[in-house]
Each structure stands twice: as C-alpha cells, then as structure tokens.
Length: 246
Image 1 (cartoon, rainbow, N blue to C red):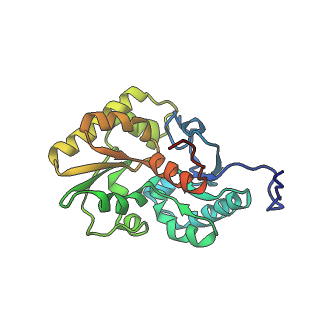
Image 2 (image 1 turned 60 degrees about the vertical axis):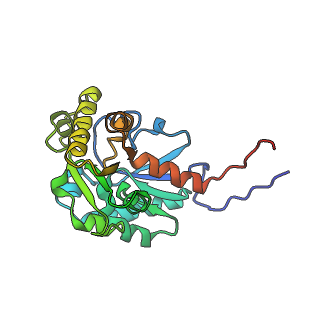
Image 3 (image 1 turned 30 degrees about the vertical axis):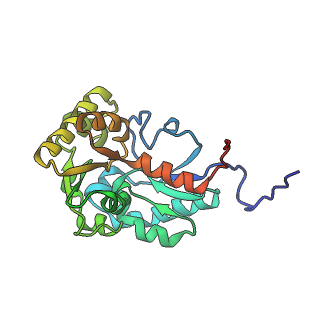
C-alpha cells in the first residue's frame, strides 16, 4: 500500500505540474494557444496577472507590473504547481525577478529556447523569430533569457498583419483562424526567402503555436514555440517508467 502525505496546508487539490501566468486580456484562445487548456494532454493551472494588459506589458513595459507578476507566481507555487511558465513571450521582461521570487523552476518566455536552438543548429545557420510585435521587442527581453549577440537571429513581427493585429493586439473579440494562419505562414515564407540560412523558426507569441504545423510545411524548417517548451519541462517534472521487452 502507498501512503501519501499532504505536503502543503494551503493545497486542496493536486496533479497540476505546470502553472501558467496569463495576461489580463480578452480574446479567443483557440486550441493550440497557451491559454487554451485543451492544448495539453496533462492538466495545467492558470493564474491571471491582475491588470497586466497587452498594452502595459508589450508597449509600455510598465515596471509596476512586476509586483502583480510576483504575487501571482507565489500564489501558483502555494497552490502546488511544480514550475511556472508564461503566456506571452514578452514576459521575458520579468524572468529574472520572478525566478528569484519563488523556489520552483520559472520559464516565462518562449525566447528561453533560443540558446538551445543556437547550440543544435549547424555552424553558420540562423534562428528566425516571429514575434507579435517586432517594434517593441528589445535587447532587454533577450538578455533576460540568456540570448547573446553571438546567436544570429532574424526577427519578423505580426503587428502589420490585419487579422492578427485586430484580433490579438487590439482585442476586437473575434479571431479568424484561417486568416491568421495565412498571415503567419506568409511572414515565415518571406523571412526564409530573404534569409535562406535560417534553419529553425521560433514562434515567440503564445497565440501562434496553432499554426506551427502550417509554418513547418511551408518552410521545411524546425518550428519551436511555447508548447514545445512547456511539454519539454513537463516531461522533466513528471518522468514516467518505461515498459517493453528485449
């Protein structure tokens, strides 16, 4: 018989290894989006960061958001998650501070994968980054996740793509997924045509993983995104025994 012990007096439920800090925003999160729980084949726990709007995080880079981010992260830790991720690549802005504020692994931004991607690519190859808004992606975001200027990047944004901009950045309330897919595939194809030495593509935005397969088919490049990162960390936190025969 296995005996289990309640390890935290603040916990009334168990089984959610991944906690996700999500923006205080309202737009459709379709399957494949970080903000849609059906994206995962394991349970996740969400926590809205109070007043953390897209505008305040992306455009204003408001330092006053740090406190609500840390509060939400600590709440997730108290609720029993084993690691904390974000639901926007621009949360890289607070990666170091949140990492120091809790005692469990923190991986706030999909951009954390860039050093890994750089290390596995053949010499002379580049990583293409498709971001929600290239005009507000700063050196600080990259520095906070360990990306150096020795890691060659090509960056393209979605801010000029009509459906994506209106649906996500402006939160019009609807999202035409077929249109967004055409937009992101178009950006990816143009980027690779201009820079054929791109050997992998990272989708920074948490709204873009639904289109990773389409980008892969259109470009032939490996595609990384928030979901590849979350699945990777989850597998490390919940290892399973192997069975088979020899």
